[in-house]
Image (tube, rainbow, N blue to C red; front, side):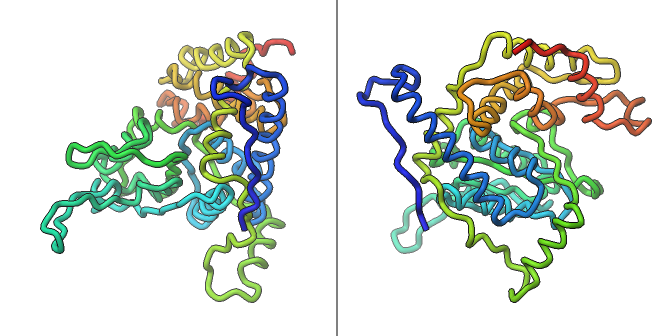
Length: 344
């Protein structure tokens, strides 16, 4: 059932977010309430993993794309379906395999036998939420088919650029255990993902709850998202993203984010540090974190809270640290401990 509420709008067409204190406060409160309700609705279907659920929602609020890493069976498809239901969006799932062609994702031109004319047959990428399942199993050519739509919100087929209706978000998954016969994403494409979210096994209590939900009185193992209610529609979801992008960031907080990213470039044991996109990602996701926490401004702890998912795919460890079994998160935690945060 659609129980979305209308978004407050400025009193004049020329008015912008933040231009009128009363309008700003009203729209901001609507955005905060909507974002928090979206999180609550997703958690009706997705048991546990609260931090990971929040990170995926942060990626959506920040109008970015998310790389999900975890072994099969942890509910990555369920998470995508639940998120789509919160804003009434369309979703599509593509299983990436070695024989998948770029046109299988984006679409192609076919002959219409009824009219004798050529027409465009749109692929599954023309959606709001696209789940690229096990993206590293497809060839580099097929992986790169997502670059245009992720970066520019459009898909070019036979020279014609076709816009993808916003909001659009790509959620790609990777299995961290099986690497044989896979095509690792190049650094340039990894950098296009705003967040790299790592999903682990649920706790014993959470797993028991999952088993009860799936096994009690239900045929098969179909994913159930019926309890997830719609909070906003697609137009309002885009407005949520706009409001998120305009939350206040103090220059000292922005400088803190930049220092974190720059420190990774000179850190002993990190062979490749985060580029400027890393600094930008920290601010974008920190704004979403502030909104979800009910604030109109970003604080240093917001930046610190999102640093691991925002940067873990943007760095590469030196070979000697990898041989020692050091994880990227450990190196990033050491960086965060070293970089001094501005005082509130």
